[in-house]
Image 1 (cartoon, helix red, strand yellow):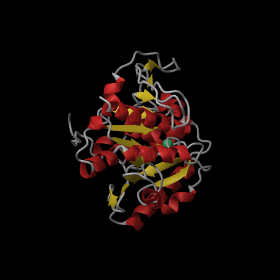
Image 2: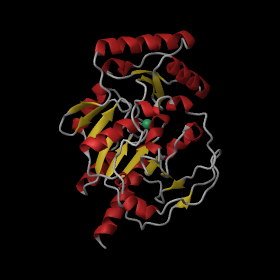
Image 3: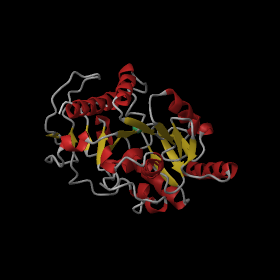
Length: 321
Ligand SMILES: [Mg+2]
């Protein structure tokens, strides 16, 4: 098993990747559903069975199962997961989700949240949930479970940085006067957000290109658009956190989970061989450069609970053999 090597995944190495988003070929990618029924957790124990191929959903062609699933999931010791649309259900945490997190912690499977939410928001969240830590601002800052704060993207002069981001946003507004700064922007350190609202995929691509011209990165989720430092993304931040704070975990022991374009770096199999999309990720199937290896049957938080239940079953089977 390999470790979390730098492997060319430095901040500079990913520059411009978001700008390419949506322009790459999508054909030939493989998708496989987790075999669990679409029900809220906790699900009753069910035998693990071979993954069934995903129903043909344009533009993705039907494909056979690429990886033996039980082997893939039986090693998992850490879940790195997006939050909005992945842990939440219609914008809220459910009691089932909190129970799933408790159940995972009880068997020693750690959960690290990797979200685009602001530093201020995640700082509070990380100490309130049964998780091992949380990464905010799409890879900008890490909050450990013992309240340690780590700048994954160092910002030497915060005032100047915020001014530069504000100027970039003003530039974007000259092309798209309808865009509005998000309410959580005042709680941010590394990036600048505006509401994704009614922007079309073509307009999002134009915004990405404009940011590139201004020497900024760009990404978006189902919630917001982010103007961000070049090279800052969820994968880069997570790899740094895994190397420094979870050095005992190999790539095969980590599963990444998400639902949106700002999660696509977490689906890059060069770094994360086991990845899962909750079912609503299919909304963005033709906008992702990297796609998850597996897709849950259920959407949003219920999809995460489905995965959680699957992992808990593998632990049970392992302990009984
Ligand atoms: Mg999301």
